[in-house]
Image 1 (tube, rainbow, N blue to C red):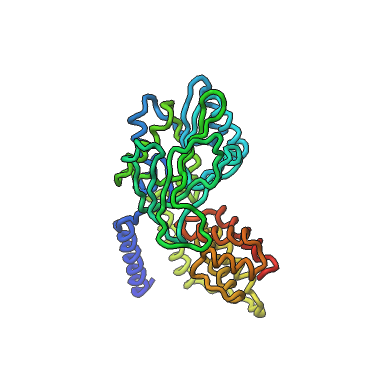
Image 2 (image 1 turned 135 degrees about the horizontal axis):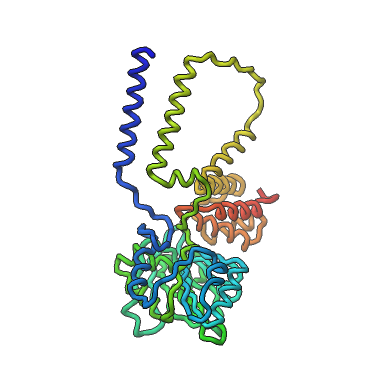
Length: 406
């Protein structure tokens, strides 16, 4: 190796070391992803709430790391318990829902706080949830209780909140315990949603004093709000719950850590991640310098062909393999809106009821289907992180809408 090559190699090594030092020493950005796990200290984790419950509980809190069916199968049947589920969205399958219903029928209780609930349990309790907001902007929501004596404990939630409420409740069985109020700054065409809606109910179930408690503001129990003066509201909500032994769900969480491959494990460990990066960089440098000393094989030049489809497929696979669902959803949304602008000459800056009505007429789609698609687009834009399920649902809605229409 000549002197010039050595100097270049040393320079590259120095740059790599400086980049590593800068990466290690730079302050970490605040993580605003949904988590709600007991161990996460990020703004939307539940570390503070979990430790407060531990301090106030007379018995040790059990942490559930498996599905409802597996957890309740091993639970003691002689002792009444309270299961707590807090997450941005909760969907129990049929088997889990049936296990949860039998669990409550035995006299146990379940507390659920979520913006969205799906599946058999929602149908059994005869409840439906909706989201209140003006476009993409979230309005401050005053969370109160139906009991006048608890008025001092109401709180105004201003930040990181998606205001959800009950759009349908079985009034014969459910008891309203709390409400949320959003003051509307301007009138929206065809807006029939009142300013005040129920957001906390109790649904007695079975003949043994069991009950479901369903709450629609999981943000109220996050570290961010527990440490910013809203802990009184959370404490008041929990005062409605029976004093049974607590089973804390750590399975149905957006922030649940799942290691599915050795590479994922390596990349989640800071030391192993840097060792992996250094090994890969060393291999690249070896290939570069080794390649200069070896005669390359003269390639056979094939005729040019149209590789547009292959390129598109490759890019799609690349995004998918990297799990960059947010980027894919953003691109699909932009492409879909561009199609609407170019074909139907509609302004897509405001995705309101007026826009939905015009789009339904021009595209010959049902207004309900059109509203479902546009509402889902608005919902996805409000999220900072997306999952594969979000992408699949968006693709289904767009394909159903655009089939033989655009």
